[in-house]
Amino acid sequence: MTIQVGDKIPSATLKQMTPEGPKDITTDELFRGKKVALFAVPGAFTPACSQRHLPGFVDKAADIKAKGVDEIVSAAVNDVFVMTAWGKEQRAEGKVRMLADGSGDFVRALGLDLDEGSGADAMLRAL
Image (cartoon, rainbow, N blue to C red):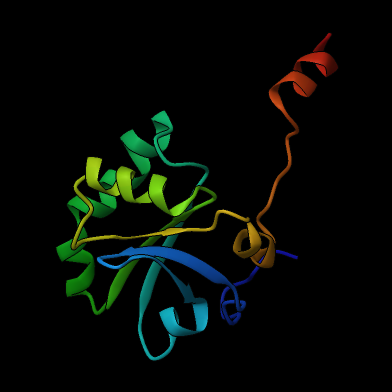
């Protein structure tokens, strides 16, 4: 079941990079008492995500926060090192918090997971 408007964000643990290295952050910690604009992308460094999804949030971060949003968060099923590198490349530091859902637990809890199989499997099905 996909999460619906008004539903509580399910409990899950994500990873974030800190000056001390990778650290866990729970969704309970992340959302408790704050207004958070969360968007998730299929993957860091993918063309559509790098050209169309993340840049708008980075460019409009001040406008979004001016409307009462405490924090803007991007999540993807990548590891914390990839999310950190992508955030740096996209100049998201200080504007969008980059969180890793490397295990996919959060996306599954939201009911948003999709398994398309491996590229080889898809190619075999097409033959």
